[in-house]
Image 1: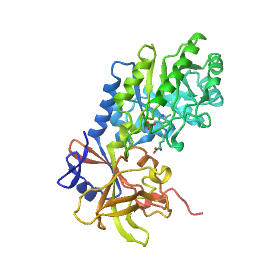
Image 2 (image 1 turned 90 degrees about the vertical axis):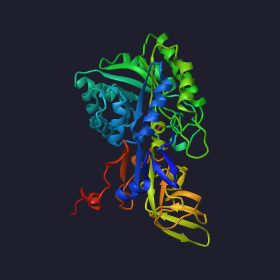
Image 3 (image 1 turned 30 degrees about the vertical axis):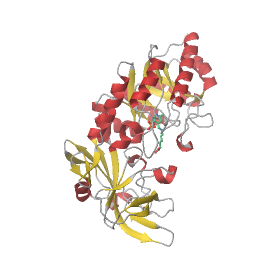
Image 4 (image 1 turned 120 degrees about the vertical axis):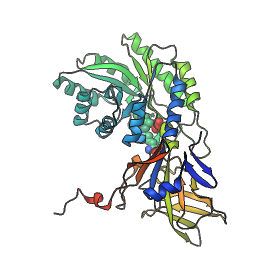
Length: 413
Ligand code: LLP
């Protein structure tokens, strides 16, 4: 079911006209549909039903606490990569016992806080990190539960910036080092090894890399078992892609069925960490056309959202559909939809055929994942508002930042 749809030439989010949301909350503004989050969550839950599994939502995809609270209420676990994300999950009433903590650069204070609140597991990415966690746990007279994040050296066949499972990447422990490290862990009295983890990349549009990674992880599980090391889970990370343009990613159902074949006869729990596939299509970014500028080369529609609000097109050359929220009849032209930021990369969409006038509002689709969470203040632009459509009402879930907030923590010396 599509929760953002045209009716009488206007886009609605569920039963609310996006024009009304733009009027009330201004632009640029992220708008999320809770019903779409629900559909996405149910799709995963239904698909994995019957298999021992846990879904740990990857907080980095969208970390607004209203979204986290939605997933917490569903009983989700969380994949975090910083204390900031940890505090967000706690503020959103997420269960610390369902948190896994990934990331190559965990700092001492972050490890202490995570141990104190009793997270489920640290996904350890190197020997020095393991030693640091051990010594902190020792000082605090506790035992840290860990999984080793493995670098399975598998090509995820996605954008190189979001590919993480190749041995040239900074992530995870080299496959051949894992078994010796497990032996070492066993001699560490303040560490309990409970699993192995991997995450090979994001926006995957094929199943085969997931299956290759699963095979490698299951092989490792077997090797560990033979060496007398019993684990309780395998975490295969996130990465399932969504449709932005013409890609055809597997559905959660297809993804789960393929994994089920690999994992159903195992006595361990399967952890997955989807981010994008749970939130991307539940969000859009509303932006207003400020000016139309025609040069000898191009037509530009200059809008009030920029690369600081939605960085994906500038950073990855990513495609997002861009639609007028009120279809107008008239001549269409090809426009580059560009933001106000002083960078030529500040393009939200290239060559879009559309009928436009200044003042029109556009919806940039599939912006619920890695949209607001990657936003910045670049060019001293306050970050946009976020609105959640829930129970037929538009709720402000994050106020638009004020100009004063931009420099409130700065000092003149
Ligand atoms: N688990 C780990 C350890 C991760 O590093 C990530 C994403 C995920 C789970 C969630 O992956 P997902 O299901 O969302 O693909 N900014 C990029 C995406 C970066 C993803 C980084 N890691 C983008 O906008 O496409």
